[in-house]
Length: 238
Length: 243
Image (cartoon, rainbow over all chains, first blue to last red; front, top):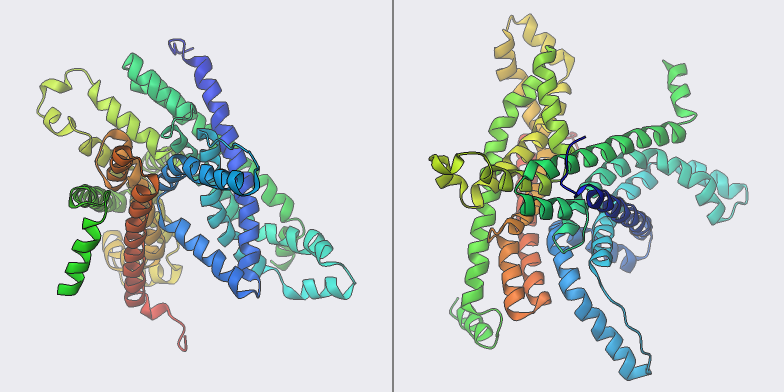
């Protein structure tokens, strides 16, 4: 085994932090993405405008700038709100914006905008006749979403979601800049202490590649799952 | 114009943060960002064309190294690549005695190298995809005319591949602009670096970062507009007739 000068366990802890940040922000991004997509597809003008503003603004600004804004400005903003609540309604709450929260919220927010675009396209790709058929069967709109719209939408959305996830994974490296001890930060600290950049950066890069490869395999499996019934039809047609 | 100028001076005189001094930092930052992004994009583009052709080669010993390069550079965060090159060059034995040290001493050139290698990897894949999508008929027609492989590449495949790659390349340019923000991590005074400096000096996160976000937004829209214009010009023949 390579000698990591005692930084091995800390690097592993950092890897865990990276995965945590990535998974949590993915969840947030998926929720925001679904909300944005439905806002963009709704007939409500205000909702539509709001969603468009959100996706345009977020995609026009670097992720690092947004993260710094939220990390340094977030606490001040939250304090203003809680102070106001305290003076107005005598409610005393304290919310602390630490590196972890700022990182997850920013990444989730950014990728929510990208996911929104992906979901929107995927929703539009579902045959509207199928939804009408569902309605004709007397299904509630929630049931239609769960049984008809969602499974078919996912088939179209998965390639885009997979790409977004890969980019998101690499974006998590930015949390090291605002001071969260993910594996990039620990590798950078170790580099400065031992003066051996490649010894720590190469394993970290390999872990990223490993996670990316595993998720590529996972996306391919999901793709197969959601493509059930379509692959065979193609084979028949050919 | 006079009025605008007077208004601007008035605005600045009533403002503690955005003095002419700090605006100067932002302007320097803008210069550094544009220089960094522009140079890395140009060099990356020059590198990517031969690499994309090599990536599609039938010979394995040409194809696989390029694939490996793009896989590694696209699969790992740019920040890691930047750290490796920024910290890495310093520790190469004896580099401080060579002439290279003059260039590599600062943070600018290591960052430029990292950005260039990164964008070259992405651009290679974009071009590779575009070359692969060349309609078979065009290649067959070129062959029927007795064109050599090099001539066919130059006259038939590359021009149409460039056009097909244009929308994806526009995204890559915007991606690079946004990615360049991490140059501030290795002490470069780019736009984000200027914002961090102003924040640290006045403890005014909203002013410092919202202002810089607005500048990035303008740059992004300018690039978007440019590429949309280019697409309209270069892809005119692909538009539906009554579109």
